[in-house]
Every structure is written in structure tokens, then in C-alpha cells.
Amino acid sequence: MNKEISASEAANLRENDPEVVFLDVREDSELEICRIEGALHIPMGLIPEHIEALPKDGKLVVLCHHGMRSLNVVQYLEARGHTNAINMSGGIHAWSVDVDPGLRCY
Image (cartoon, rainbow, N blue to C red; front, side):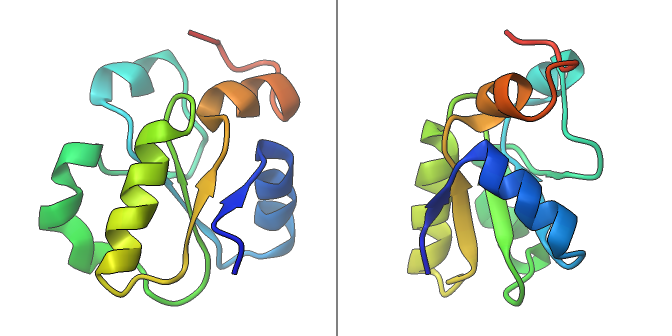
């Protein structure tokens, strides 16, 4: 499975697969600026203690601000048996540019 998709591809996936889960690993303060409605929020530093709450079936699209933290989370999850995690390259910034221009950029 490709471990990275664009914001546009993630939007298409979300539209066509009701089972897909978006995981936002940004900090609380970042979420106050903008967010993708319905995304599960677990800050990156808390992933290890919440790993059991994450789905192992279906697709798990992981995002952050620009895509670096989420890539680290995808690699972390994959090393622990979560082979369904996919990084959204460009993060929420790319989402706000390519998918939802109404979202505030920061």
C-alpha cells in the first residue's frame, strides 16, 4: 500500500470510503486554528499511550501541519503492526490550499 497520499487524494478517499479514519496528530493549540471536521485528534506525543484506540482495519490517514510529524507517526505505527496508516503529504496546509480554501492557514 502506498504510505503517502496528497490532500486531494485523501479528500477523494474520504468521499468514497465511509470507513476511512483521519487522525490529526497536531497539538491542541493548532486545532484551535483549523481542523478537518470528524478527524480523530491525538497529539503526536500521546500516540504511544493511545495506540490501542486506533483502528487496524480500514485506512487511517494521518495528518499534521505540513506532513512531517504525521510521516513519523505512520512509521511508528507501521513498526507496531498498524499497516493501514497513510501519511497525508503537505498536511492540513495542503488541505486548506487544495481541498478546503475556507480553512484558515497558519
